[in-house]
Structure formats: C-alpha cells, structure tokens
Amino acid sequence: MKVLKRCFDLTLASGALLILAPVMLLTALWIKIDSRGPVLFRQDRVGLNGKLFAIYKFRTMEAGSRRQLQSGITVGADPRITRAGALLRKYKLDELPQFINVLRGDMSVVGPRPEVPQYVATYPPQTRDRVLSVRPGITDLASIAYRNESELLGRAEDPEALYVEQILPDKLDFCLQYVASRSLWLDVVIIWRTVLAIFGHRR
Image (cartoon, rainbow, N blue to C red; front, side, top):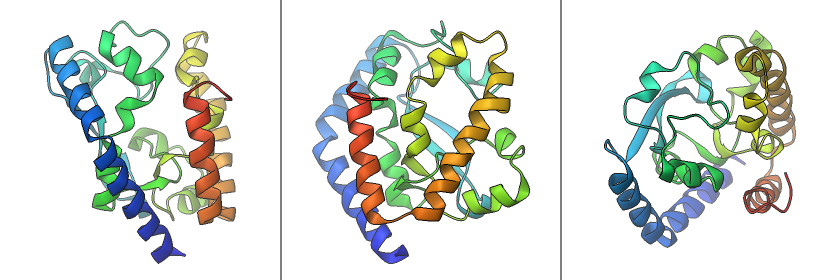
C-alpha cells in the first residue's frame, strides 16, 4: 500500500505540476504585480512521525503579516489578504505549490492536513500518534467539510476558542477516519470531492 500510494502521489504531483505550470507562472506574476514581497510563503508544519517541514503556498497576505499573527488561523475577510490572495484562496490556487512538497516526500496528495506545532501540541497523545503515522496531504475529508472555515471563524466571537474547542477536534475525527480506512480508491474519491467543493457543487 505504501509503495503504491507513493507511486500514485509522484505520478499525480508530476502531472499536475506539468499541466498547471502555465497557471502557476501566471499566478506568480500576478502576485508580484499585486503586492510587494516573495511569491511563495513557507511555514513550519508537523509531518510524518512528528517531523517538521516547510510547507509551500503562494503568498496571499501582505509581506510580513504572517509574522504578526497570534495564531495559525486566518479569520474572515482579513484585511491583510491581498487582492490576488482573495481569489487564490477562494479557488485554493494558493495550495498548488504543495505538489512540490509531495515530490519532496513531505506530503501526499491526500492525507490529514498538516497543522502548525502549536495546535499539534493540543492533540491527545493516542490521536497524535495515529494522525502523524501517515504523510499529511494537500486535501482530506476535513478540508471538504470545512471548505468555508475562514468564514465560519469570522462569525465567531472568539475564533481561536472555536477552532481549538470545536473545529480542530472534529477535524481530528475526520483524520482518524481516513487513517483507519485509507486506500487508493478513497484517495481518488476525496480528490474528486475536493474538485467539486472548490467549484461550488458541494461543501
């Protein structure tokens, strides 16, 4: 299963980067024109077996704004999000550089979304061990269920509390469900549902 999944990931990531290269190039140019700063945003996330790695995304916020965040979440219509960033986030185009993470072996195409260390530290020990026993992914069941997470947090009086006390435990349940029943067929289903969710056919 591990070898087949790795071959699946390498094939899909290589194909995606090749096919989407023009889109990624135009996106990079748009980011540079729209605001000052680097094209890519890198952040430490917790990966397989608790190992830290740098996740890649297209930058969607004003340069330097991430260093000022008090938490790892983005809430509602954050004023630090650039004009280009708003559209990139809507259609998840900011996640495309993570196919590079897949090629590097940091991530899979499908798997539990990697969290920042501060939130992983809150996982119950047994749950942590199971969730981190597989490579994190670009998409998963929780990503589909919480497609509009930022908007949900934006309506909360205490977004941080809502995330830590309700959303994160629910996400971990999805992660455990995936770890227990993972298969290549399930990966294909999740990828298809992700595409549908991005284009508004379902959440």
